[in-house]
Image 1 (cartoon, rainbow over the protein chains, first blue to last red):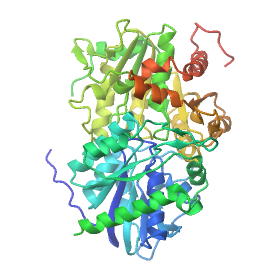
Image 2 (tube, rainbow over the protein chains, first blue to last red; image 1 turned 180 degrees about the horizontal axis):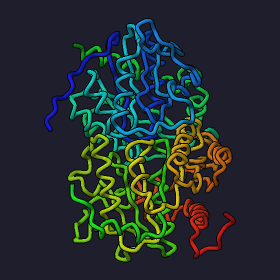
Image 3 (cartoon, rainbow over the protein chains, first blue to last red; image 1 turned 30 degrees about the vertical axis):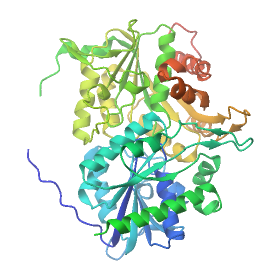
Image 4 (tube, each protein chain N blue to C red; image 1 turned 90 degrees about the vertical axis):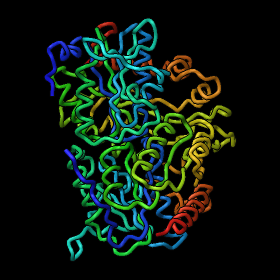
Length: 267
Length: 279
């Protein structure tokens, strides 16, 4: 059954769209997306939006301290994004009661995603960061087919098993002609809080090697620290709660690189 | 579409215990826990099958060092890949069917659903004591298909994997709710990446927070199967000295912990080779 592909239509009121993806679950896409969006807003003073495209495991409400909030509707019947730390955000997590599983097949996922893409009143933002779910399935296809994505950021930890999926994630963007802005090496190493010993908990330098192979830049090298998890769980991105930390510095530099690359790509 | 022949449907009825490994959250260690559980059972002399239904991120071939292997079709169905000549441990994964292991599998729901049905019905496992099914994160097509197709075979239940942190628990709660919805019994919760011990000074860092898994098990009134820390030596061993995860695991500090978890799982499914725990 031959079917034409949907035509890409840009989202109203959004200038640039960046997808934070990985292929592998649990490598830190949401953490990266939240800190990137926050730093773009607070450090670069850009009007920033963050779309949580993970319908089954929406992490953004928790990480931005917006749990339990329900979005209102605008006059035009669009969902009004919720705001914290200067970032406008929308997530399935705001639309479904907590603890309730979204047990949906692909078709319903697509419909919900279309609503999150088209029926949110972003009202003029410079950049929309999309936190992608793990994998390379319906969500990723729907997003890349429906809207023009200006660039993708691939997050991985150094270990082989994450990199294998990261490569698949990158290949997927290649298939749909979305440029990859670069990679993020997350959970890169741990510095013992007590003795300063450096442990490469998830392997050493894997992302550097893969990025090299794929001729991609490494946008950030982010170390492991219990602070990251602790502040995330409490809903304060580390760039806000620990602005002097090595993490905040790394994310600020990443924000600058991402913005510069987007400017260079422009349309 | 061809009807499944009676021969093919019978494959799963030769399996004594079917266990699903689920989480709501990605990256908490479902595939690792599946591998560790399968290896621990195989070490006890059990015949174990591992089915990898994570179609877009199939990890099993790599975990067992079987990446270059291929599956073969026999008249009775697909022959799984065995880890060694003893044929005690067999693995089936989409990873074996990909031409190039870096290929991205970008499929929508209906195609995934069809593949999973084939995986469940057409693999000639032979007689198995345990079939352990590794799933992708979430509660979508794959999970619904597995639950529907397995109903006729009465799976023993699900082992739920989480890390201690709130952002994982929030997703895992949904998985528990899913299991209740589709009536899959919950065997218990494993809290993975529970603490990291500095190899230099033995200080324990709670890299991914602490205690959340156990608290959640209590909240949902399910068994807490155990806490598995991050073993820095294991990653280093694999990287520096090569060998597969499966080889290094039984030599690592995690193995005794897993022997404990395995014993609890066996008791829970009523495996007569161990004294039954009170149910």
